[in-house]
Length: 131
Image 1 (cartoon, one colour):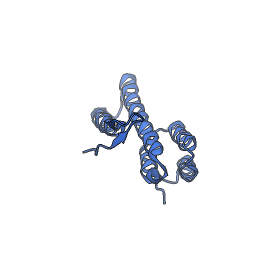
Image 2 (image 1 turned 135 degrees about the horizontal axis):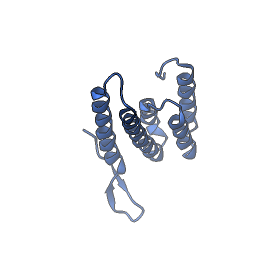
Image 3 (image 1 turned 90 degrees about the vertical axis):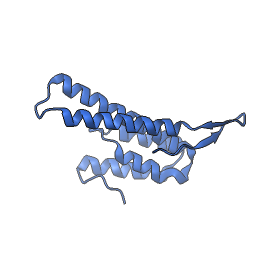
Image 4 (image 1 turned 180 degrees about the vertical axis):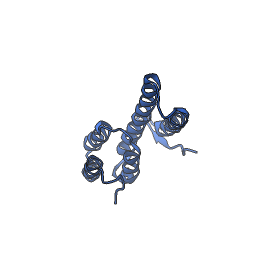
């Protein structure tokens, strides 16, 4: 169950952070993708392949939004952001590249370097584990 975090807005009012909503959305989209993948036959139709790819893209988009939230919260949240990058499943590397840009936007150079290392390992097919 996602843990809700509370952030304080500029006017001093407490609001539930978007992170909890995004985590819930990730879980829902990930579950829907898994169910669709499990129910897809070994020779899927064009429509089935398209729907599976669309669901995968939705999962990656939510993960990218979560990475943005973690980077915005500060450098100490870098490990969680890196774990979220590991969950990205895009085959062409655009989402991992976008995650690197998010880290750069917030000035997290170490996280950006780790993301670049991960992207390089994925490109070379050497696995997805990060030290």
